Amino acid sequence: GSVFRHEATGAGVVMVIERACRRLGWKLSEQRCVVQGFGNVGGIAAAELDALGATVLAVSDVSGGVYDAGGLDVATLMRFAEQHGSLADWTDGDRITNEELLELPCDILVLAAREDQVTAENAPRLRTKLVAEGANGPTSLEGDAILAERGILVLPDVLTNAGGVTVSYFEWVQDLGRLFWDRREIRAKLADQLGDAFDRVWTLSEDRKLTLRSAALVAGIREV
Image (cartoon, rainbow, N blue to C red; front, side, top):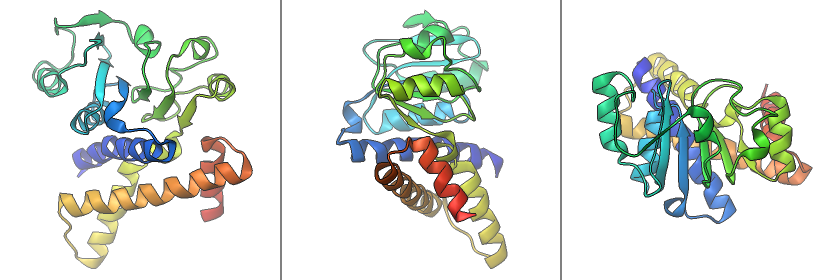
């Protein structure tokens, strides 16, 4: 159902991050991550990053952010957010604004909140190596150009947050074939699909000297 679709979007974001780390020769378990958005997508992404051994330094929702240089206890934060509806009354760690969160020094910045979060105004101040777009259009055109100029890799929304729509397609296939796949099978199929899509986009971006966003759009248009 829709809950699993949202979960699949968050899980898919991390599958794409994992694939990118492999291509870049990074160990995901050594990366320091910041996640904007702590709902269906961001919360799942933060939990999955944490489970894979990465350090989640900061998360935020509409009430603002929580930061701990030593790493957050994501599971406890998730339970708190579920019980209280937001992180508003959370007292541990440093409270920061969503704007401050975006500019924290980190290795991976996950944008899983709203559109137009990284703009011409703040893109020069981002201190990350990789931006993963878990939301739709979180980077403005001007912000995107600045990140490209600064050599900050952006995993584009059209590829990175496709987990939910891919799982919707799986539901359709199951309905047609009267099949029933369990969660483990769906996750494995999702990882295969996203991994294959990522590899095609990465190869195209290298061959044609394109950003990953342009390569993803070219790959998409070719498919259609």
